[in-house]
Length: 205
Image (cartoon, helix red, strand yellow):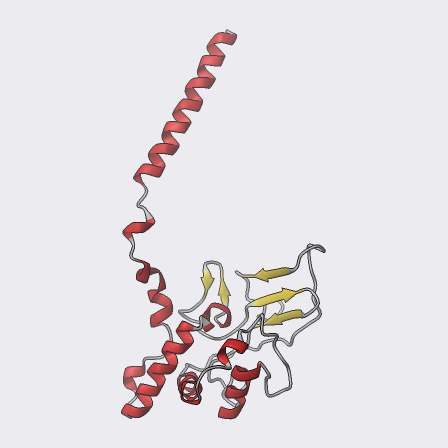
């Protein structure tokens, strides 16, 4: 009896291994999808710039869109969802939470053109200042390791202006963002904890 059970165990293990190998063989490999297809949703997100009638403004907005996409701004500034940034309905609306020991907990800003909760009330110089130095109009400073403004500070004045022109064209989304808070870690030995999949800017239920 023990020998029969042992053989049955071997058969089960062999069948399981064969099934796993077959699964790996038949699933479509990632190489069948071109790399640009993975990034296409991010590159095509945002306002329809073809509707801008002024050719100079359209050119500037397109340049701004290119720089915002290249800088991966929407990775952190689009509201998190269960499958990553919600670039479809909450593009650049903020809400991504990052915590670093010794620095605090930060929630990414709403970069849409909404007047009350976004950047609609910011001046062009306000926007350029935060890109150059990480300092918001209210005096809040974002560390360069959370927002890579030290890299953005090397952008030309023309590129900074293009980004501003583009951000002015974003759809206004009402999404209030809480202020930075004191750091709180679930793991006391952790250096950094990034949270995704939850809209931390949503009002408590």
